Length: 76
Figure 1 (tube, rainbow, N blue to C red):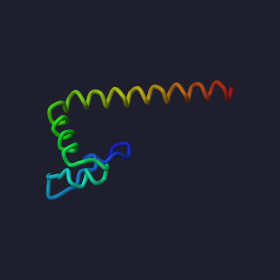
Figure 2 (cartoon, helix red, strand yellow):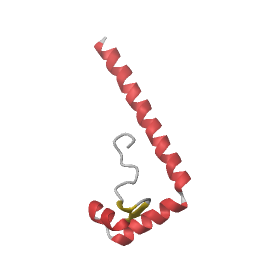
Figure 3 (cartoon, rainbow, N blue to C red):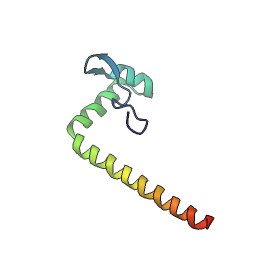
Figure 4 (tube, rainbow, N blue to C red):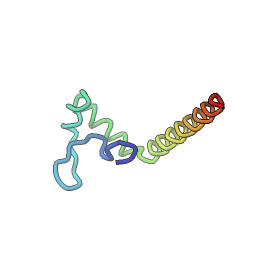
């Protein structure tokens, strides 16, 4: 797990290295077709999605660091 996130994103494990969208559709309240579409999209654009996730994490880290600096100034 990284940052409390399950690496398979909630996919149901069926056997070694095999995950099924059925459990995920129930978990997230989506139709199976929606989960399959999301998996297909992720498979096609994995690098781009990963880069955006990392950019978002950096932005969160920067915002949190700024907040801590501001709190330190206010505590003074």
